[in-house]
Amino acid sequence: MLTPGGAVTVVLLKSRDRQVRYPATVVRDDGVHAVVRAPWAGPPVRDFGFVRFERGDVFTEHYWRDRWFSVKEVRAADGGLKGWYCDITRPARVAGEALTTWDLELDLWVSADRSAVLRLDEDEFEAEGLADREPEAAERARRALDELEELARSGRLAALLD
Image 1 (tube, rainbow, N blue to C red):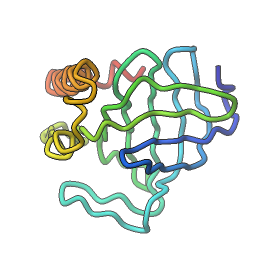
Image 2 (spheres, one colour):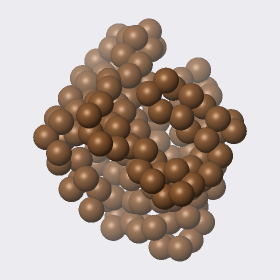
Image 3 (cartoon, rainbow, N blue to C red):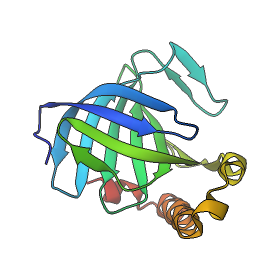
Image 4 (cartoon, one colour):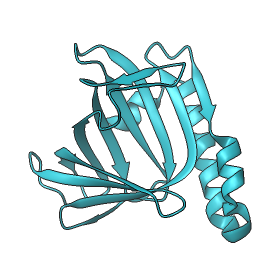
């Protein structure tokens, strides 16, 4: 398990042997659900059209060792909630001071006021060909996206993060 207050490196494995690594601070870890906090680690501004991630934003990231997704609560530098960015991933693994997930390209965005629940990158998921290579994994990914969308639309996403 990760130690609260300790440092961890988050490793997001992506298709075509790409990966993103960034430092985070452990908030808590019960052996199944790990929570870390990190500043926005991307370019100074990334505008998706429905949300802008920018320098100063803080992500509280929730990872599960038994679920096929992660949820990132996104707050502006002033503490205002922007929303939740959810990645469909293989279950997280922790080894040493690294927390690793495998991004499966499907995403869900939930705005702070919950008025927008957007399924993202379904075309990228299909183009990656996971359904051909690993049909069971592709089906689990689709079910995870459906589950997250249902939690978001029913107002139960926040309870999952407690």
